[in-house]
Image (cartoon, rainbow, N blue to C red):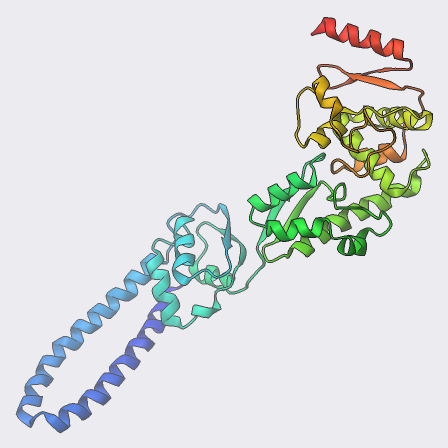
Length: 371
């Protein structure tokens, strides 16, 4: 804000105030105050007007000083103005970031210029030392506020719901209802016919608008999933699994694999076991059935009664157990060409693969001696 402009704005307000006082006071005094008294009052009003002028100039200087930046570093500043923010709250945000010196000066300026309703919620990219005129112009643009959220691979829909709820992006109850609303799910995922959104909240980094609804947020997840699926599914080479079964298998691979290069091999192990009618015996599915992640399963854990317990039930579980990323989906669609049937985890997260149960037992013994 340039000083002449500030002066002109305040001078205009002050002039209208003086005009009002002169016009109305003159009428009142003429009617009720005798002539000699009016003359004495007139002499008193002269210094009073001078004081008002001094006060006016002081106010202009105070407002002007308060709107100057407290630091001129050129550093980029991201300012988020939430919906429903008052003028005072916006002023405090500007003062906190060092964009102005005094939030009260900002309040005075906004009310003097009559632009109380001109400030809009949004996310603004500003610079330390930016002139106030430029800042105020930006604040009237109303750019949407976006929240960047990263969803790691392998999270469950419950964990993703908690993450989004903590960020204040969703109504948790509404979001959970939509996760199992098959009519809503089928508008995006009819090809898969899922029971819930488990496995389809694609892991990635997203920028969600502050005003985005739960339906819109889920739509972003599903569209991203479908985009990746349509990029890799046409090149599938292995198995006769349905689209949903591919996602189920990929979700297990996501939880079992720690090394990128092992994902296609782990996919082949599970597909080989399915083909031979062996139970998958995936510890990840048992943890999903238990509803908790554990560093090590106990023998009693393997007895948990659940269709997701692949130690008790043959075949794939009824639904995905996590949100698989691109690499796990690709592995389920294009498994390695191998006849491995077993694997056991090494301390570094890699696996030892075996073709026979005897080899598998030997690998387990060798790993126990290394621990």
